[in-house]
Length: 333
Image 1 (cartoon, one colour):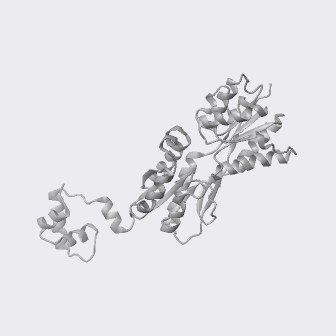
Image 2 (spheres, rainbow, N blue to C red):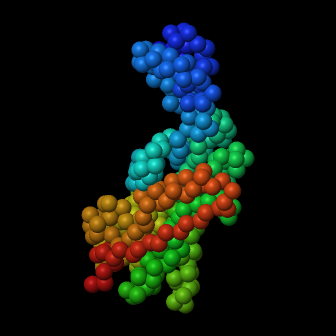
Image 3 (cartoon, rainbow, N blue to C red):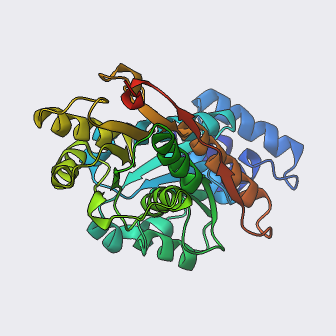
């Protein structure tokens, strides 16, 4: 592949002159411009797109940071759907996506190097835990960024769903069905989504004058195995219904419930969260809270592009609605 220096030698001008022609500098004579363009055509030279973007001060590349284990990325259906939404929005806006999957310890050692590379116009951070080093490093770097999920810092732009409302509606549905000993399996309680869904659970019970029994609250980790293990902790307390903070954990909980010889929903009703593609195919089909995962990715890109275009604007906060999808896992016989 020919280089910039070869084009300069072929056209009899300096390397800097060739660069000015490629970048449409108006201070190049028409005669010189034509000579360089002819050399470019004869040598079939193609300028390095990344180098040109860097020279122009932008790269048309957005970083998508998913601070989780690689195994979690491929086992949790949430992340592929989010990535799909981000990629679709970037493609529509002529941007590329650079995916970075970072274990917490790896993040602490490498984040500053990535942020100062100059390769990214901005970053979207998905599912960060509280006090994540990525977020503090982004603040220090000055690089525009948007979070998927509500951060603790209100000065950060983010897109999220109304997790409190979604969880509250799920538990109110169980209460309207006549269930009273309603347990919950939360997500990791160092994440805003898990805390908000737990808050919605508490609010629903309290709104009906039912005291919250801490023995009916078990912490999970958004994995199927985590849901199965948390359900084992809850079974001795004899709940008659369960709200899971994710469909994946609900799937694991259902496995434990059946292994204990209990029928769903006759002896234990269950509601999930996400409305994953597998939810209607479970036995029985899972009642769940639908959140627009792909749209969250798309809206995060839109917020970030708006920040890039208007850097002096204040932070943007977008909260999307959820929808309760009622299926057979909560039906009263």
